[in-house]
Image (cartoon, rainbow, N blue to C red; front, side):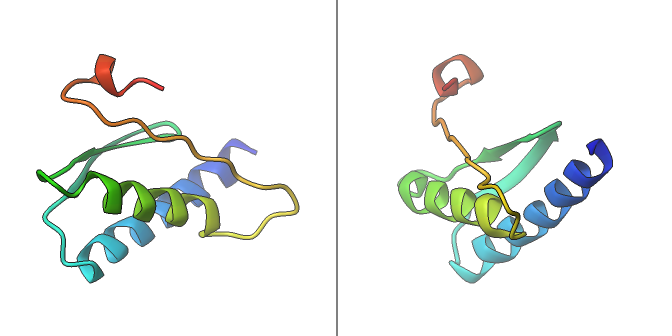
Length: 82
């Protein structure tokens, strides 16, 4: 199961990166830790980037159970905690 989860995460990262580029935003993925992505979000892009990340991570693969994604935004990890 861990291998499958890692594969899903890699596919989601590719989709997030592609979708960010298509949206022509400056924000980018800077780090992946287990089942989390950390992004540097340009000023004024938080809402659109949250939507892109959530959609990409929830819909990269179709499973018989839903993948639920939560997001957090903040100037540091503590403020972004969810």
